[in-house]
Length: 355
Image 1: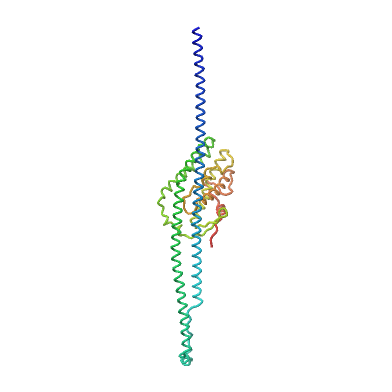
Image 2: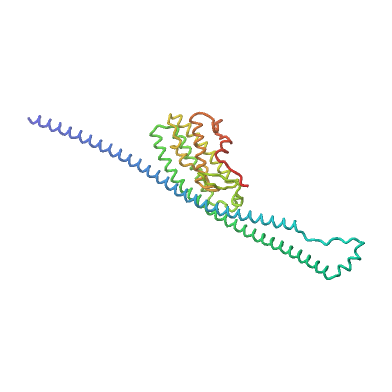
């Protein structure tokens, strides 16, 4: 009887231990699932916050750049009016030169000597001399006015250049701060690509993250950049381009940055399209982090960040399409290097010369 009781107690203890272990294992699985869910929520919050901060910074930079551009356009219009006034003054001087007295033939000198001594002849000569003197004084006054206006325009140009420099310094600082946050977001998305077993896209995105880190280091080394020695801020705007129906102006340095944006965008788009094709993934260029970021190659100078992002994405979409469908519609790839056709860049930018 005692042996039966002991056997029953051991069986109950074994059953209880097995149930407790099962419950503990279930609790651990629930806890791991909860931690994984919390991490995903945190990554999504970080991504939304990064997109919101970037949008706010883009809007502020766009407004400041528009104000500086309007002031510069007004100054250029004033300078053109001054040049027109100067041309009119020069033309007036050519049309009304000081009148010289006509030469007197030798045979008539004695006859006219008496007439010249008449009071009427002296009065006419005096009037002519006074008119010539007044004309010279008026030309001198106009030239002095033009000189003073040119000095004012030069001072105004320097003031506008300093305002533009201050805007771009602030823009570069904001972009450097945003880079830190963007790098955190891209690491979170890389983890998602690993879970989806998208190895090719994971490698492409890792390369983009490395490129952003190198760009961040270059910007840190340029914290003492010599803006005053940069010829961009002393060069007149000579090109016009349009984004979303709004006209903008820039010079040859800004135009070069816009071309760079299209080139870099095409290259990164080609990499992303090729990776999605190799991973047997759908045609989804908007999901690529490089497309959403669109800042590779941007330094914070010469053009607004929103303008750079726009033209980067234009190039990205075309590069993605060429690589995904294995064709050379907008550019080509040879020996591992991508090249976008010049006609494609011209069609995207549509730069117009200001006359």
